[in-house]
Length: 164
Image (cartoon, rainbow, N blue to C red; front, side, top):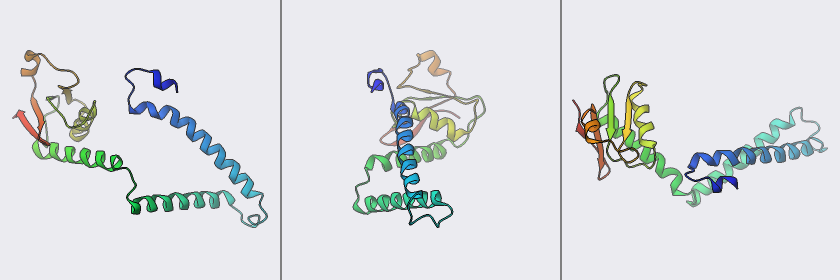
């Protein structure tokens, strides 16, 4: 609940309550495991905890398969991954390599927030490459002209505006 009142919070803030939920689920699972271990039906089994994990994993897999067949898996789970993969492939196709220490400016990107910066830096595998996002931190014209590469996304396609 306190996260609700923090201005400018992002999706990463959801990991904070996730830790609490993980502790709650683990303690409930541990309680059920201890109860199952005391059961006369399972006393003969040497590793009852492994059985409990296997049963839990089986239930999770059954549930996931059922939801996938029904088509009730939220489309938002799959769509961002496909968009991210498409963006990474377009970056590789348009400009596979850049020289070390390059300054890259992305005027407009298809992903919200700072995602494009991280994707571009990951694609180039070079810590010396710096990426600026026009939507997050617009540059003055003098800085814009000093960029080594300039890209933009138009109609879902990456276009190189400046570069060798």
